[in-house]
Length: 283
Image (cartoon, one colour):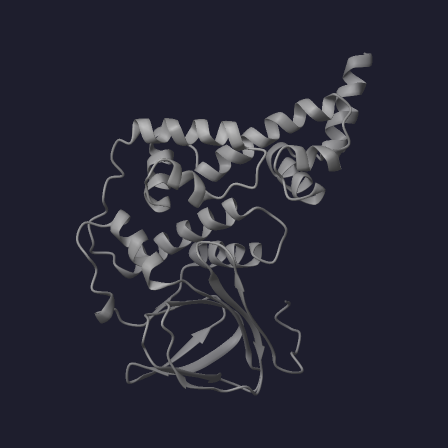
């Protein structure tokens, strides 16, 4: 939304997506709405796109401005209201404590004292943009694999920012597990597999498999899956199969999902790839 637009009324959307056991999300444009004092059993992670929100938490009054990232630990009571007549807009993700603890256990030596974690208000453009992209992805077509991996990656980055003194754990050498995971992807790329399924196949947590896979293969595990799908897609496209059929045959959600990933990787659409290939063949 452009910063010079005026929001006329409150527009709040709150829903759950069926990834990683169920994750709640919120997208809100607020002018007059006031959130009464309440607490969540999950972590609250939010980014602010416009305006500013004033809230009370842990005996302090804070203001979250556009471009900031907010972290509220579970059980911390807080309020929320517009800091000015212009209101504010923000997006939030509510990851369960067990998921955050799992990510933390893989990342750090020792157990962080989450019960004593303060409310965090960060100004980090890179983190803000990655969180925003991850949140938006849940409203777009795409497979759960990408969404799981990107959410875990962002949560890990947030934890690293919030707990900078913790020692980062080396992902270790899971050579055989990574090889089995790669073979699993190669054999099931055309199915709607999730990151959790791949991790279960090697009896590792998804956060640990993600870091081990990257350390050994040099590529994120979800990017590897996309690359395998695109490799098979190119072969089928050159055989004359329609893009809509190819998309489903290699594991993409639909044709638009294939087009988006194809152009991200190669800079052209599947249709352009086929046309250019035919042109070069005739020469």
